[in-house]
Amino acid sequence: MNLRGALFPPCGKKPPRVAIAAALILLALAPAAAATPQTSINDVEDEVMCPICGTLLELAESPQAERERVLVKRLIAEGKSKGEVKDALVAQYGPEVLALPEGKGFDLSAYLVPALGFLVAAVALALGVRRWRRAGSDPPNRNGAAATGPNDEDAERLEADLARYDL
Amino acid sequence: MSTRAFLAFLAVCAVIGLLGFGLLNKGEAKVAVGDPAPDKVLPVLGGPGQGSIADYRGRWVLVNLWASWCVPCREEAPELDRFARRYRNRGATVLGINVQDNSDDALAFLRENDVRYPQLRSIGDERSAAFGATGVPENFLVDPEGKLALIWRGPVDEKFLREQVAPLVKGNR
Image (tube, rainbow over all chains, first blue to last red; front, side):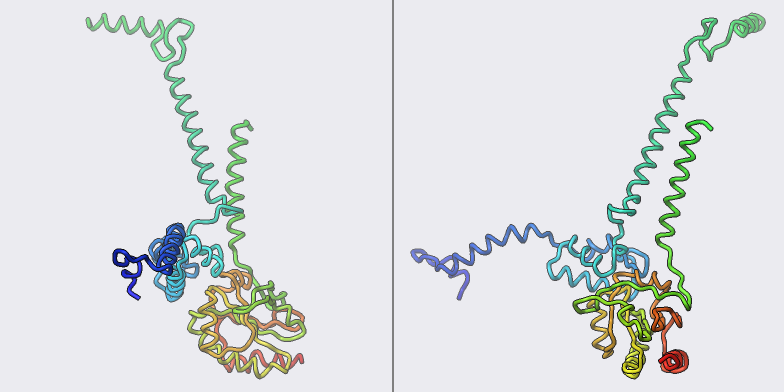
């Protein structure tokens, strides 16, 4: 059957029911297809490891990596999303296959420790800056001079020196 | 010790403890002849159900860690299959544990090499670590009590099976 003829019959002819049903099915499937994002080997390769080689899959060239790549390509050809591909790889090779550790259990420390370190460094820096600024603006001392300025004795000597050199 | 110094000391201890825990977790086990064979219930490769070395208690078990991409594994497979058939009714079996592999490739390997002895599957490298294995293939003879009787970190051939494994198996029937 000519599909174009079936879907767009000449004027005056009603489209056959089969064609209408097919069009409706296609319309119904379209959002589902859009909801499952397609992925590519390049998109997956930089997020998974070749566990035997100990490097990212995209950098590995060993026979083991090639087998893993074949598996990824097959899963993509089956229409699996990136998440599904990664789940399948974990089921085959274990969690070590993920380049980024999972955010649970001990692996959570991979995210928490740097964040904690950053927080501690930021607090230490803020405290240091605060102390430094406070030191720069200390209140005047008992003689009324600023803590960092010359005291009376120094001031008198300065005056004497200035007078001596006639400045 | 001031409060600040004490907190800094605690922080340093926490970081060192964390690093130590991580290293210990990743560390490989060391096994020796006479030790109980590292065992775990594993899925049967390509089939339903599970299995373990303990399922063969009372028999000698030659545990073979292998992977489909490993060339020496391909070379030793026919010898292991011959040994398994020869000793099937003489108190010994070969048990393959597929490691560092994906199951499709592993099953294709078994078909291509006509391997018939039972096979389990380790997810990733977990079983290699348990046996302290650094590669594949590695072979471990487990006695009828479940203890390691022989450790061979490499491929086996007919001579090795005849001279090293067979005498142990025959001597304890």
